[in-house]
Image 1: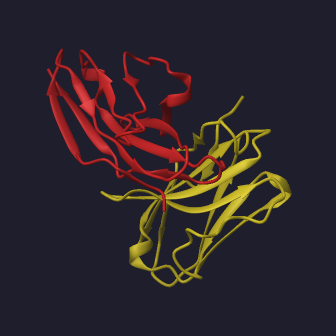
Image 2: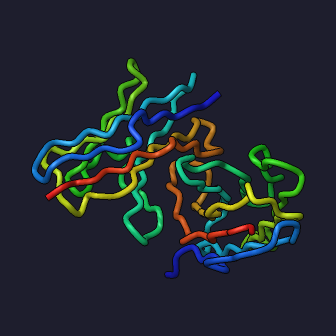
Length: 109
Length: 114
């Protein structure tokens, strides 16, 4: 069965500090991994996806198949990064998206 | 163009009543998903529509929940005989199709069952 775990419910860091939001998954095939973000009073939106190998708003994420992880990283956190972050997996037969429980990131001034 | 639109944005209902939640996906998006977002529970998959194929209903929590999608566009999620545990934010999302396309979410409907 497909499963996504995010071990931290809440992560607090100071502005300018590095941040890493952890995501691990279980899936026997080749998944597609995503990070979605929900800012206060806004809809859930795509942040980045592993196949694009891009950096969005300074965030990057590398798919590590050996460790079955897709951790989200940013070297210098900003206050505007405070939000709820969800890691999501889609199977290689392209059906359902499975989401993790989410991590609330709080960047302190 | 416009994003995914959901209505109503808020719904308060009494236990035992039926409710209907509506989703208008982005034009041209063939895939439509319903999720439930509960406090501290993340996003729980409910149902998935892809084109004219039979929907994947594997996430519906009970037979009180049903959904339909008319004309491959608008979708309605119906909850019959609502219970207090049904209180949550119900999110709709659409995508261009099953392969390599991300989800676009609506703002959700906050359902409160009293």
